[in-house]
Image (cartoon, rainbow, N blue to C red; front, side):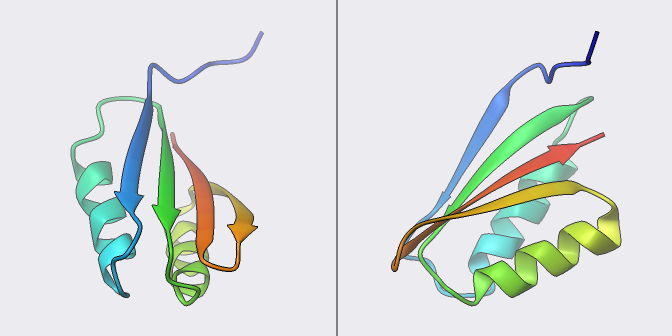
Length: 79
């Protein structure tokens, strides 16, 4: 049996330049109440470096998916 998150929180940072996607993620994580999953949507290609590095430092699970040249999704799970 695996633990499932209570909710999937969508963070829409499309059209926002760096560092806004990361800042929006940090704000959402501060509001976290228990284990949750976050779907961060970003159009900034530089966000991949920022978000994945931040998740490594904070020991968060992060899956990256390139939807198109202008859209990147990050599935992040807080524990």
